[in-house]
Image (cartoon, rainbow, N blue to C red):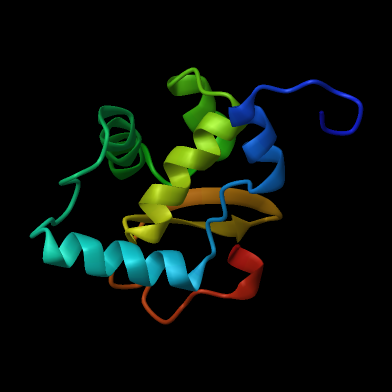
Amino acid sequence: MHRGQILCEDCYLEYLEPPRTCDVAAVHGAKMSRKLAGQDGTDGLTETQKNIYNYIKDEGPVTVEQIMSKFNLSKIQYERNFAVLRHCELAHGFRKNGKVMIKIWGKDTLGSMHLTDC
């Protein structure tokens, strides 16, 4: 029971602990895990995550809504998949004219992240 609603265990956990894209510990953990596993680029990602990455790479920068529409994702499905791409430093969000845009992580990204990007 959460706020008067009966939820399944997965939905309950999503309410209590939603995906966080700007999480320094998660980024460090993902980078170290991938390094130890010998993973690079899209190695180790799910097919959905690889497809999202390739879409951003080919079409980007794109909006969150474009990604959700292209892959028929709910907001939480998008957030889960994007969080992995962000933690692996494969993609990130930024604001352009007040709108959140998503692009591939690149050389121009390093050192240019701001709290407003989260």
